[in-house]
Length: 635
Ligand code: FAD
Image (cartoon, rainbow, N blue to C red; front, side, top):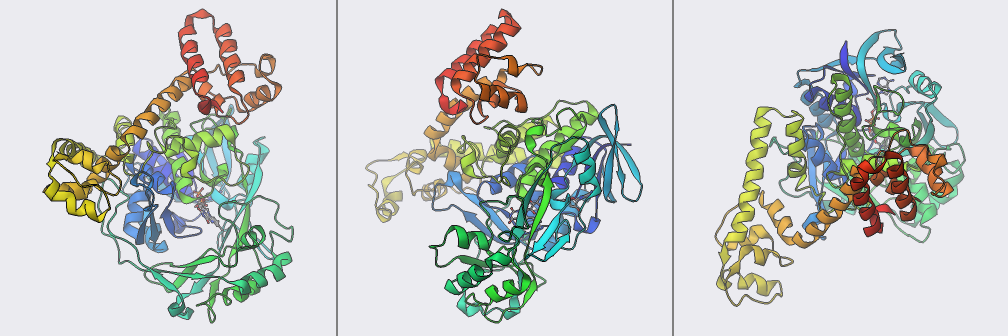
């Protein structure tokens, strides 16, 4: 008997298993194929805008993704450098094989985690509660909580053109049909989405002289706890498609599975296929094509930007129209895949299915796309599956605490009408949710939940102390005009007339705190990054903290679980219908449902207080004030 069984060894499953085991649960990771644990189905890269911060959050809690990335990265870049350091986003190109092996090795270090290979066909239940799983070959495993992280595998179907449709979970893997049918048979709403991947090519057949070489940049570790050695670094290459590619795609558009009408599921708008790009942006004459190495021990390359559902012969044709790829050999064609997902408004904020205790969903099965989105949900589902099994407190991340909180709250409150991916713009507190302060935000929780080993706690505490010391140093040290005026002149800024505190100087745009401290004769390590952002954005951060406090007031006003929304006639019909369907846990969550007006929220407060009697009125008054003071919180 296990405490928790995690079905699936992708990016949600591996983090769910790690978190459940770290929280003290005897956990089984049960997946179709042990060799594909941590497999990257598409682009071998981790991080990017918002996603890089999620990878750091997962790591701060003791997850796998950060350390695996550090061990497998073959190119690193900090995105958004031209915008302020508060929105910098780390991204690493990885060796696909090294990443997979690192994930498995890291998981194998967790003593409470066991592994088994098998395809789950259905769940076992007792009295409406999940109690175990049965595999297609008839093995059964019992557990107190189950996490389903089956990715794109549920009734997965690969398309290449109109005539090639292959049942598959991704290229080379069988789909998961029995489990999909079992879940749909339980009355759980099921819908279809699609996503796609580009062709891969033999790097030896690329004329690199016609491309632009792009090297990575310096040192960075996703992990807060370990500084593992990186492998050798490799460059990527940039080229551009032109009118010839546009012409080929336009001529063959009707042969695309997407445009020929054989795919019904919706795809990710922000990760469009090349067919989509040509149709949606007809005026664009060229599109970027990044050639990214698949690994250190192969010449195969990933063709970022040319995802497609066209027949493979057309893919080769359009590839060879791209400068540098005139003689290219295609090693694997691109394809589109359609799969089942479960609209996530059916879930609690713990990612447990409403009305089905012990059953949790995480990752692509909840309508998201992306490794990091999957990993973030894996953390939430794993921690809460362990809580369900061991009778511990549930863990819910707030929107001002982690991008993971934004992600889960968006999913369960707003639902999805296309594959959901994270952007910084989805977070109202984006200056609070930075890659440089993930440890500071989440270490106290990781500590309380007992997720970290002693050595990890020691590293975290030393790091946070060093950051605090650096900030104190900046506030207490003085820099003289002769130490800095040459730099200020170069930056076109007014010179200092008299000595100032280093902190004051570092608030100027273009002056990095590390640089200012160095000019003042003080050496610091990379812990200076956090102190720098804190100083530069102090005013904005204070404002966000205040807005977050108001949100917390609304989120502390809980809504009764048995509230009969259809009978609340002081609310609009539309609001009643949405509240009835989503059944928000708090007033704050109700306010984030699209279409619920501030007036309806106020009426909701009145209705709830009337039902509770006067004893709880203080909370209602606080909530009422929060509703009334900032419409942006409730719109
Ligand atoms: P997966 O990584 O798919 O893992 C699912 C796991 O479940 C696998 O280990 C599988 O073997 C296992 N499994 C399934 N059914 C069973 C069962 N019944 N029993 C036991 N084990 C089971 N993301 C992006 O960010 N950008 C992209 O461009 C992009 N393109 C993609 C293109 C394709 C073709 C595919 C397939 C995915 C793409 N993704 C992309 C999505 C990215 O791969 C996923 O978001 C991410 O892998 C989801 O993680 P997951 O853990 O939910 O599922």
